[in-house]
Amino acid sequence: MIRELDDNIRQRGLTTQPTVLVTRELNQSLGGPVAKDKLWFFTSYRYLLSNNSVAGAFYADGRQAVDDNTLKQGLGRATWRANANHKLSYFYELTKKFRGHDGLAAGVDEVAANRRPPVHYSNLQAKWTGTLTPRLLVETGFARNVTKFNVVPFR
Image 1 (tube, rainbow, N blue to C red):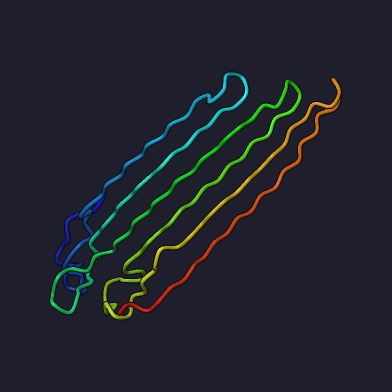
Image 2: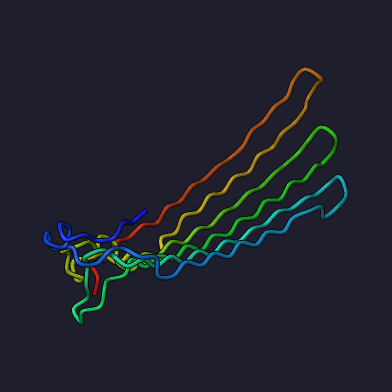
């Protein structure tokens, strides 16, 4: 909860408080069987936009500064049951994050903030599960996680 600015806070130099300017979220998913008792899929997509004003931070033209963020995320999964004893699953996720004014705060000049171009996160997994005997279950898999992160000075 954000309380109203009182005289004590204003005397210390904080004249504006943070506010939510825009927030949007869209989530979609779809899944189900492709071939009965053999092949299934699931997919999902998420879009999130969140722009908030920054308390006590202003652009050169006098407008209150904004912390602008965007997230786009998609994932997919497929599972194949080769027979009653063997199953193979595959999963992939891709996330891209953007932040337009990272580090912007009260008393920080706009040009001192960093701009985070879309950051790329991806996750890949594959797994095989096999029931070799009534007493022996074997699982093996592979996973890969990639993060491409870059921060550039605001221009």
